[in-house]
Image (cartoon, rainbow, N blue to C red):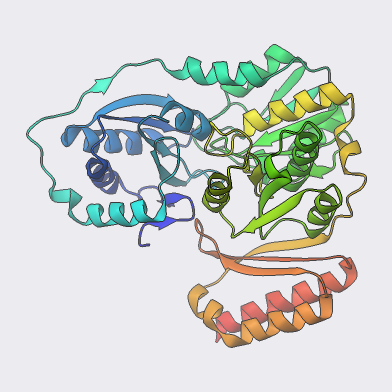
Length: 428
């Protein structure tokens, strides 16, 4: 794909993602022949310029638009489940990035649709129409808020929520404070502070706040609200794997886990998978990317799946991860079981994990170099049961390197060796 990465179209605002390009994207939406398109944004500085460019493109080819302003991706996906939507966000990336997630009947575009859309982009600049669309004024947000309230329950544990100065900065505090004692941090967006030392990619701040306030746990969302991670009462980080394990075990116990199966990616912790198997829960693994998880869930009529990054699918009507929804369900389970969250993981022997993003100049050449894969094969021989993954980021100019094994001492040595190999190949 020329424009689509792992999660829509993404780039640096006003450089690779320009106003002119967004007008073309809006025009290209006509290939789907929608009656109207729902548009929403997260909180980054470029949101309005890009939103009005997209809207202008749509209007110029006769498509009506409902502009919902700042809203989370899951909320937009739910509200546009019977039509089309465009979410202007770069998710967990810094503020100077932005992107567009194109939604078709409550899900992201599949590969066939992305290919069709890229073809439409080639000619959309010249697209003309005899009629104009209109900006429609609707208030559909209440239906999403009603969905959250339907699944939420009053909770007794004290919780801190980190809104990442992002799209959930209004709705998350409102819904959590209705059901229990909640302390809110990082809910004052200024256009530049989205994901800045906060949110699901920077858990240290949340951990410090939970410890300082003597709270029971904390949840951190990302910039557009489709991910959630957490910390326990001791300040320990909780990955998406932790939350998925808790949910899977609970749903199985309640006979609410179809086929006793959960869908994970190849990044998930091997120790967690072993613990799931001991609980009688089977795992289907996919490549990295929430769209791969969704496709397997749909194909197998399953209800639970996700990524260690915190993108978790939990509801058949929500065709995406929803950080707020998942966090409310976790609190519901804790209230029902009267347990601290860390008590759910006592039977899990977590494999040690090392990960790093490496900025390189020749990503594709490195990935095609046989010397890299020989080195990875050697490392796997040394580590035994392990994971070693080197992949290009779909949103940033880096290689993402992850290594996982039981023996943390050997792991560190092998991880440093792999990073050195990648750096050396990049210099050649």
